[in-house]
Length: 249
Length: 249
DNA sequence: TGACCCGACATATCTATACATGTCTAGTTG
DNA sequence: CAACTAGACATGTATAGATATGTCGGGTCA
View (tube, helix red, strand yellow):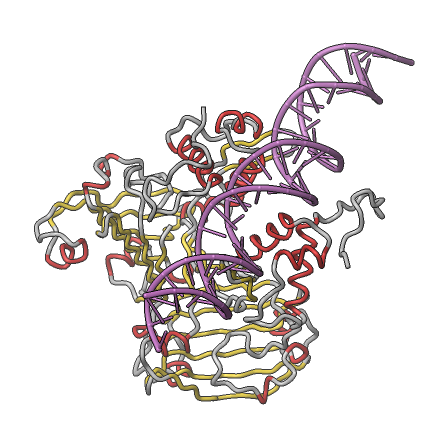
């Protein structure tokens, strides 16, 4: 049995690009899994068997199976066989967009105001957070991001000088969240925590809130070389900002 | 010039699996891009040129380039060539974990309490949200999720009966956020919005908060067939819950 | 009995070749 | 000069065959 007629098959509808054969093989396998004919954990026919079954070459079958492996549909073990994988459990993701991109893509003007920009000595809490001795030097900044003339976000950052030597002279109108890190210092791990807080008087003033309202706060820690090199606390104007995630399974 | 010696090359270190040739080709290309020898937008040597340059077959080069395309390192256009792609801009993602899984994986006991479970008639706002006529039937539930004996989340959901016919008799101790949808109704699109709010008296009572505090609120809308079929509003106990994301680039 | 080896079989990779399809250019033709 | 066309060249797909490597079971032998 073959799923595919000969190479010289006339195209039924010239305007429709015929599906490539390896795609047809993928569809064949996925269909059989979806109907339950091949259940989770079952072993699929071997490549050679599929070659006989479908009338295509082994490389074509192999490509189909390799892509299905990448898609998480099957798992393969050399010398053993190919098996129907556990259905991937859906992970729902929220995209943390850069505030500047967000403002610009909504058709507004993005500006920043530097409130504080200095080098400090770490107190014991900061030293602990950065895995350094108390008294270690850290760069520190407080910046307000505006949408047109409305403050949307206050960001406070602490940065290890070693990985951002020219932090104090950077162009803070740039958007990228890791703009300050030198090129060698590629982040190895980034941790985000999102809270809801009621801001204190300083942040209320910076966000021009007449009275405190619930605000989103994002804490980001960036690791390089097993150490925290940047810690940022981003407080968003409560009723004016939300995180949005939109995805298609 | 070849990057690869003959097939019968003796393995220098038998315990180290030699890298496959298509992997070596990928590394060769990536290295040249990373050093800037091939800059963004530059055209790479054609497959045939790489064959000559590297001493491997075209299929091997092709596989390397196909995988680099999937990785977003290069872009290809049939009949034109292969080009160094824009470096993918980092998107930072926050995983929205299921509350029940979260509680259990932290070693606590997860229980739920059904506060409300009924069928209602949509008012004009709800009808608008679900793309239906006012007066349409909707299932409605309010459920509190507890970590041990502490309320962590209040969820309120509205569900289109057509896609969740047995919603009212479901097992609400199950965790999956789309447990209620029938198997045919695979979500096409899911939208999440995260706010910070100050909860009203009802939610404060359900979360056993003595006085209002800033809380995270997650709104989720699920589309099937171009229509909203489920809308949920999840309010998390303010100081007791945060979203955490941790990832390696 | 247990350690070892070997063969059957599975996936993984690589090659050489062929043909299909998309793009662009230079030249031709009206 | 514009429109068409042939050809060069790029990627995309498919094939058959060979080799490499991992797994497992059964047979052999001390």
